[in-house]
Length: 319
Ligand SMILES: Nc1ncnc2c1ncn2[C@@H]1O[C@H](COP(=O)(O)OP(=O)(O)O)[C@@H](O)[C@H]1O
Ligand SMILES: [Mg+2]
Image 1 (cartoon, rainbow, N blue to C red):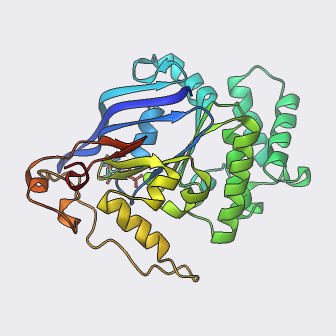
Image 2: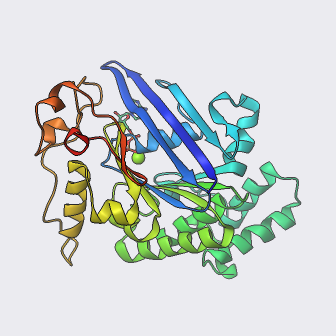
C-alpha cells in the first residue's frame, strides 16, 4: 500500500525563557493512502505541533530542528516558500483545533467557502458558490441555509461547514485536529459520521488527532499514542485496544473501558504529564509508570517493532 505521508525522526522545539521545550522529540510514522490514522495522547504532548510541522506552520519561538516529512511525493521541509500555499490546500488541508469558532462572522458561509476555492483556482464566483453549496449539501447542510452567517448555525453545523471548506480543493490528506472536542456527544457523533462519509466519498486519507482514544476506536485503521513529544506505541486499532503493551496505553485503554454510561471516568492515570522543558533521564513516562525498573531511570527505550506493525517504546516489553 502506498504512503500518503511519511514522517521520519521529526524534532520540533520551542525556545522559551524556560529553555528548549522539545514538543516533538523524534517522531516517526506514516499514513497509508486511504486510511484513517489516529494520533492520540493527553493535552500538551505535541500532537498539534506535529500537525503544524506537516503544514510548515511552526512559528517562532518554535522551530523544526530536524527530520523528514514527505507528503504525496513532496519533500515538505525543503519546499520553497512560494510553493507552500498550494501545498497547504491542495495536498493537505487541516481542520484546526477550535476551527468552528474561526469562521468569519461578517461573511456568509457559502461565500467563505467560495472565496477559498477562488483564491486557489481560476473559477468564476458563480461556479465557486455553486461548488460551495454542493459541498455544504454533502456535509448535510441544506441549500436554504448555505447563505446564512456563521452565528445562525449551531456548533455542529459550523463544524460541518469547516469540513466542507477543508475538502473544497480536493486534498489528498486531511488533518483533523480534535474536530469534535468542542461538541456534545450526540453532535460529535454526527460530525464524525459526516467525516467518515466524506472520507469514503473522496477517497481521503485522514490524520485524526484527539486526546480521546474512544473517538478512534471505531473510525481509525491504526493508532499511534504520543507521550511527552514521543510515540510510545503504534499498532492497528484492534491490536492497540485489545493488547496494549505500553503501560501508558494500558492506562488509556483502562480508563476508556471504565467509562460509565453517564460518561464519568472511573479510572485515570495517576500523576500529570511531564514538563517538556525538564530533562528526564531514561524513559519519560517513568515518573508515572507503575512497572518502572532500574533501566528505565538511565536508558531511553527505543521505539521497536514487536509484532507485525506493532511498535512500542518500553524496556519492560522488549527486554
Ligand atoms: N507557541 C508556543 N510557545 C511555547 N511553547 C509551545 C507553543 N506551542 C506549544 N508549545 C509547547 O509544546 C507542547 C505541545 O503542544 P501541542 O502540540 O499544542 O500539544 P497537544 O496538541 O498535544 O495538546 C506544549 O506542552 C507546550 O509546552
Ligand atoms: Mg492540540
